[in-house]
Image (cartoon, rainbow, N blue to C red):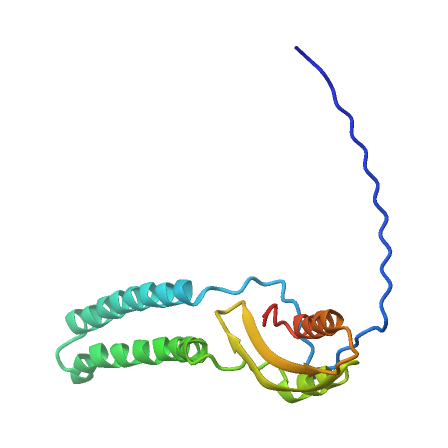
Length: 178
């Protein structure tokens, strides 16, 4: 049993908007080609790197202690010196990761979003009288979340205002909003 179906669909859509919304929120949010690493993966890699460096340092210190002549008293300091160097290297990598994770846990506003400028742009949307309770925070490394309570003029199209404000937030890299 064999049969064929051919379907062709063409759709043309035209949308008219009362006004075009422009956004100037400070620093532009650039789309990075480089994939951002998860904090979990970064922490695992740091742990593995720490273990590997510790093993290499222990081997170096053991070789120095075993193979250098006894008159070189400083050779006994090679183990603690190697350990301190590894601590410095690991801390240099861990501190930025720690700050990033703390900002997410504390639900801090992302540093790349200029909240004042974004608030000024929201007030420029036709029909917006004022707003309050404007909060933006990081849900994780990739997702910014926002909430705002907007007071609209009575004669305005509330759905249009909501769509325009959501578009402003979206352009500011806030893709989930209430």
